[in-house]
Image (cartoon, rainbow, N blue to C red; front, side, top):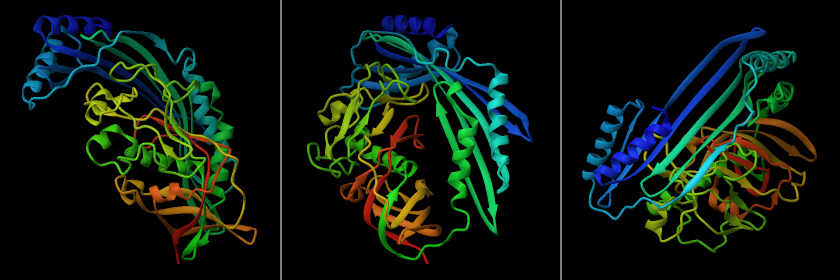
Length: 439
């Protein structure tokens, strides 16, 4: 069966069995092309997809999934979901009511180029990187893309589908100069593969990593910190944990009880916008079929909203924001889409440390307390002279840091969220008196 046929069959069968059912079907096709020695190397294509079922029966919720869309497998999955619901404690769960959501194509012709053209992107990236004599090795030069289709329907009237996709260039390299060796990576993402420019991506990689060659140890002390957009995006992904309605409902959010209160410095405005035109994670509706809308999370430093699905909204006495997220094989959660920090007036040059990258975030950052202590890379400016520094760690509490921001940059960059399927767009931030531990 097709997704649409399987959805209709399941909803009809759920009606016959007297249970409420939400069906989420999704399929993703991935293409990856690796350049090696001036020509296209390994090309891989992978496809994965299936049907996810969420049953509500007597206020209890049960999940099941299948990648086989035959009638027998669909019937088994529905029975499994009903039986799983029966194992849960009594509750008052309910599927959200909805309506026709339409059919949406967010990819259109964006990924319609030939495989040969896409191979050329990867080869050009490797070629441009190797032009620099400081490049000791190109570890990888990749073109990648993903195309996905999502179909949703429920016995409560929800019905819709959409296609989405993105293309990427990714480079990993090692550079050497005068005995100094540095390893790094660079990437670029776009909804249209024609927008990817290997030369520009290579230049960013070479400039970004090359500026760290010849680094000297940073001495321990407190200094003004300027956090580059990539670093800010990492920290905002960490902040998103506390802005999640799921975290709030579980009593783990440091921002609980602070709606309407100041949680960041003036000038800090953070939104999540799944309707963003050209956004890497845009979507017309969420995983429950709630239509997407732009949500202001922090406005000029004041907390305005958390991100919710219908379940977390009910548990916390708030309203869903249309941020339900789940895979066909997963359970209901909450996730960001296009998280955007509004640009400001710019960051004034001055003495301090420009933090360009953070390492080991999964181990050195606590999303519940906001305590961060991480190895970092950067550039120090002293008396107007700038030079690369390494062998240092930066430490702060994220929630306290947000309160002390004194400047917001005016040039934002977009990065894929390392913690999920969303994207984060952010400019630089400047914060005075940050702790650096070096030698």
